[in-house]
Length: 278
Image (cartoon, rainbow, N blue to C red; front, top):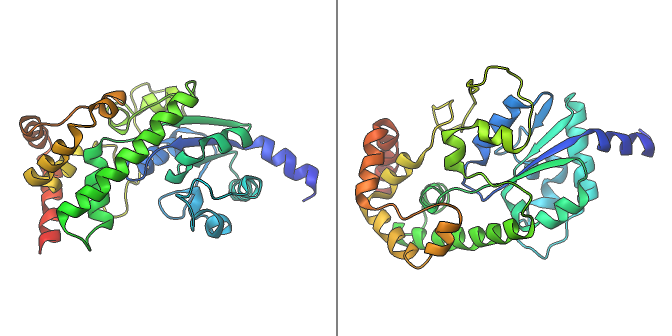
């Protein structure tokens, strides 16, 4: 393939970027987009993230959360383009969470693109992060660590939204209520003409759920009353940040109401908490 062919191929690939925090629903959002967009490529590596594709993994992952680490976006774009073309696709879906610290670089480098900002509530983020990464410390310590992480990354997202006000924002929870909002925000011509049809998605590998469901009841059950109280005490000083993204503190009464609405999800979260405590 000569240089002109490579340049033409890059121009023909449309990139869809979901700029969002880790543990905030990017897997399910990416899977939804892959169902909605004709001839779209979704990475088969990791959690469908471009950073896990073998040709770029050693470049992108070692210093992925270092904002001062230089990434060769020309090389990365070429690698992603080849992945899409080999699969016979004309678009590439990308939602690697560390991209939130490199929005300006990505916006400046990729010409044919559509973008959206997203994140999930601190309750979702904290519970998911604690369960997946922090079994080697106490439950209380894990919540403290992940609350600081959510705050730091949510602040980064708030700055991103200020710097790029033309990029739409859609929270994980709003997406779950109406997935078609994501299609509308990215101006996607859906594969189906049925206005209310929502495609089935593979979901997480470790969950027997293949539909788009807000996992908040599962996470609240996992946190329990002790975790909920700890998070709420912390968030009392972060109301401005919460309100910016349309969130509020979930008091015990509201938590109980959410748990009653989705008892099976709540049971799943409780089982995971019990397993941690054993």
